[in-house]
Image (cartoon, rainbow, N blue to C red; front, side, top):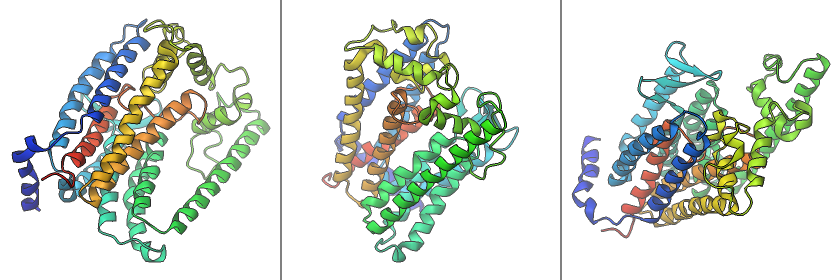
Length: 410
């Protein structure tokens, strides 16, 4: 193994000759600056200085991005399994009382003093490496011939997902299946598998819908409040959902049931819709958005989960379109780089990262305008968060490495 690692590290001798892709880094820098500016704006009326912390994380992220970009991505074939095991260890440690740090009713952080790490973030890269490594060593065909590979993938992705759900952290778990399925798709697995997977997904949605109906009936029959008696139903249900997660789903599907006045669980969504709708074409101006400045869009979410709402209110349709355009550059370029990859491993990495980012962008923006339930998924390079920023930089650094060491580089 060490000789292979030495070979890969030898690429530093020729690193300056490899051509960089300029488009994604430029788009990422622009998104990062927009993020810092609107984190500042969202907290303009408060003494908080999270925008300064974000600058520090972005500085660290730049180091991570550059380091990962300079090294041949194939090194992860040799050390990826160690990275995966390290991430599993962190996911186990965070669940141990006294080691994991609990916030807002969830045990998701490891506190190192100056930095609190959220292990679910590097776990995304760990699942990416594990999935790509398994797929390049397998020959997929019919479902019957692929049982062994699918079993390995289910284990490799399922164990981290289970540990993440136990925190609980639903938002970090639900972004992993689309990434894995996209990598399976380009590996040309039998189309019957995806038909079966779609059927299973629809069945799951039906089960969740039935559970929501039962939940609403239980609360009504027992004269319980959705807002005050959270936890009363979850101990009776066999689905691994918390009652506050059920409330989020009901806020999306039936807000008149859970919050008829719109002042409780539906508050954030209602204020987000007002923010987005009041921005007009050009917006109210930077730091001039009333929803965040007056606290209608709560300070706890305006700088992370709902930062797109702040952008839409203060920079309007044109500002929102600019953000979407920058993400479009990142995503389209990621697919282009996947096509330029020198081998199947590089293609899988680039596609996996791109789909992961696409899910983040779609779900985050979708929840701010009422298209999907509120899940708390952050917006890459714009939402506040140290672990998330570093994870995004690592993943995009991989895509840059795939480009730098592509098939036409000699």
